[in-house]
Amino acid sequence: MTEPVTFSVALHNETATARLMADLALLVGPGDVITLTGDLGAGKTAAARSLIRYLAGDDALEVPSPTFTLVQGYELPPFPVMHADLYRVEDESELEEIGLSPLPDATLVLIEWPERAPSAMPKDRIDIALTHRPALGSTARAADITGYGKGAAQVARLKSLREFLDASGYMDATRKRMAGDASTRSYARLLRDDEIVILMNFPQRPDGAAMYNGKSYSAAVHLAENVKPFVAIDEGLRAQGISAPAIHHSDLDHGFLITEDFGSEGVIEGDELLGRVFLHEIDHLDGVLMLDRLDRVHRKEAMRELREQGMGVKTPGGRQHAL
Image (cartoon, rainbow, N blue to C red):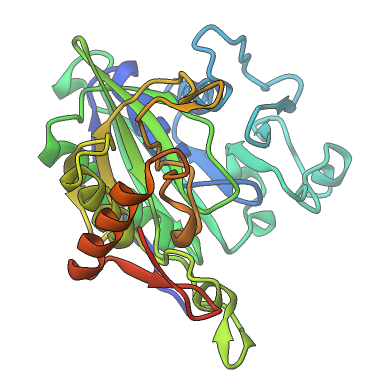
């Protein structure tokens, strides 16, 4: 049985709460459950509202308290979100009537006042207990975040992410959601003064079951299993004078990067390659370089030097590619 994991955060104002919830949003997804506990006025709805607005990419999105409706649903760009308030629930049997028993599939569920139906709460969840901290200011709160079951690993990762942002000097940056891809990676833009950078969350890819000659799918097709190949490829490209994003800060053990932001403009104009390589949504290691428009001599030289640096990758057919 997995032991719960807890850490605490001081939240001096609602902006700090919004940053915390944005960081958590980077690590959760459909099927996860977040419960919010605390006295009246402790900031449960404000925390839920911050997370929903972050996922929506809309700081002005109307997110009312579901105290009277009990449940409010949101079809957001990454996945659906359900926001529930159980304060007025008198019996757990009522949860079926409002769509919380069983919990909906493929939906992130936020539940205020979970103590009103304790036995109905799933074993895998993240709980955020909010309390007033008047000594820190009139709007200050403390958040005790506990992960249960699989939520324990998510809370441990949240703690590591917060430590990484603090050490990198971006704890106070504004977070803006970026669309991700079909992988386990997720991204956010960090805005600080006039600077914009990209935060990449690249968790270790689970190996999975053996499928091809005793190898898992990711091993057989050479998918990157952690952030280290990305860093090696990026540094190799930059060493060749190819425009790839600069990596400003990294935590290779946990899989967090802060990189240069190339913006949202495309890189192809007609038949010409404009010279920038975007790596943030690339999954297959043997498909990283977009070298089709580089001349053959330059390509062969780049491949030779990358191989010498140990940055070649063999495809399942045995052919080696420089990345």
